[in-house]
Length: 244
Image (cartoon, rainbow, N blue to C red; front, top):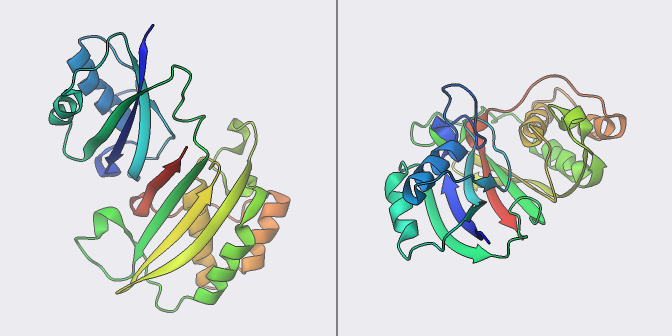
């Protein structure tokens, strides 16, 4: 019987077309890891991820699983990391029951979206630049509070008809002042829909700019109608915690 392994890792998504393997010449995180692991095993290995991230999105806490016909050698982690580019790092590998699944067994996920308000070449790859000096932060905090709870987030999904259900339990939606002109949105839920975080951030920034009211986001939850087309940029988004 094959051995199943969980791997804890992180990656900077700047140069990848997201987690999932893509057709054509685009490079994904999944494909890059599979290529390295296959080289070590001398046979094809399929990596299953705990979720999908879009092009340019990062993960500071990510998990995958794969099956192997043979037990892993003691220095497996060291060898695979040597074969990977320096923007992907595997932290830990351990054997699990054959029924364990990194995606379906996850109970909770946390995403952070980082914003800086002044141009900074060192922050640019890992944070999104938005000028927020005149924003209404009280309104954004209120909008966050109206989003939390178990709701149908159809209005905040890119492809709602591709999901069996668009209901999510959003346990936290918050905005934090990190100091020195930096801010962080945090979202914690049992599950997220495609594009959901970037759409939420885009609309929350519209609230801050006075273009819509906090109650407009609440009304969109109830009606299922989009508030307009738009997403926040990808570089500020991190999958930062997965709970099992």
